[in-house]
Image 1: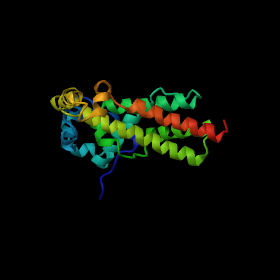
Image 2 (image 1 turned 180 degrees about the vertical axis):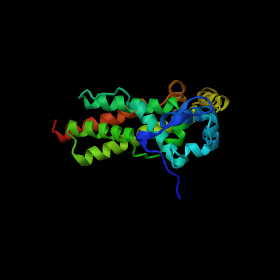
Image 3 (image 1 turned 45 degrees about the vertical axis):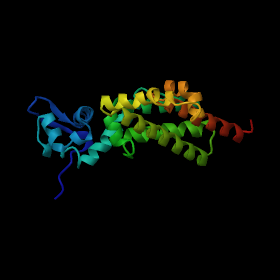
Length: 236
């Protein structure tokens, strides 16, 4: 017989844990995020989560059917942080840029969790709300539905792909990350123009840019393309 899962509206224990805290859905997710930040995905298990909460693993399964369901809840929590206090302004370009930057930043706040969840589709409330906001901005701007769906697809996949890429870098051990970042100065900047003329010509620019995320530039390029498409559709 499958274990009973506590309904969303009642996910709170009446008894306190050994640490004196009242167990809840949110507390489990927040504790899992902390464990991911400190130990990475390899350090997150029901047993270790139970120990961190002052209870046993079986209690965790009263709130989640399994660790994969917890992973989806973590993904939705990241989107929730991105959407907190966000309000549409009616300027579709500004709204989409703000949403993209918010989502990207929320994932980078928890790099280990981002690596674990950026490729997942949770179908949970905050994810759905963000998708509704993105599509709403596009459709309200005047994009026909096929264009809105295509641009939404590119927008969200680009945002999450950069989040995963940048988070993977942040999740590296500090020594490895610093070594990677140093390659641009130590190797690329020293390549001779005789053998690598194009790298040599842009070396200073590469050193200045390549250790920063390209997401804001990529986002602006996507939105500029969308703006040009809308202008063409409207005969401007």
